[in-house]
Amino acid sequence: MRKLFAGFCCVALCCMPAMAQKKAPMTDQQFVDFAAQTDMVEANLGQLAQTSSDSQSVKDYGQMLVTDHTKDFSDLHAAAQQASLTVADAIDATHNKQMIDPFQKLKGAAFDRKFAQEMTAGHEKAIAVYKNEADNAQNPAIKTYAQNALPVLQKHEDAAKDLAKKK
Figure: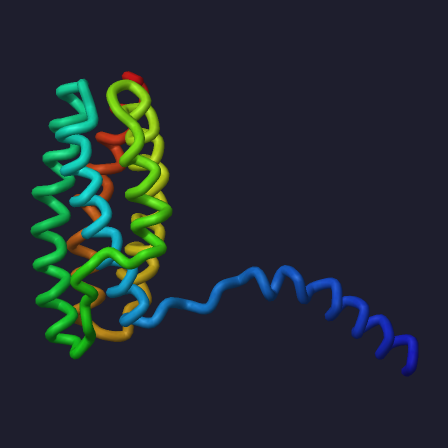
């Protein structure tokens, strides 16, 4: 019995790191926080693309981000209000430092390369988060919002991949 118990403990201890890596699901408020930061950062970077890029395709992509994420931010507000959740109205310091600041120093081709890479990676991450929320949201308004936002995020990811191929 003692050996059986010791074996069980060893197996349990070996499995702990794998279990610890699994993240707890997002609450709807955490998702709204993520979506708000995403919309504001993307719109801000889209505006920055207008002045920092020499490429018309990057400027056009940037304008698409501004237009789509501004509309999405409005849709998020409406869904959050229905769900009695709050929406941030400014980019937080962490997102500003990690996402906006690195682009402030870049111009031309250097901006374009980093922009295309970050837009591809960022939209991949956002799509995964939105899919999870579309499947698991607690509030129906938030669930519907996430489902409706996914095709636009996919369009952005596809366009970012096209930009990356050109750069």
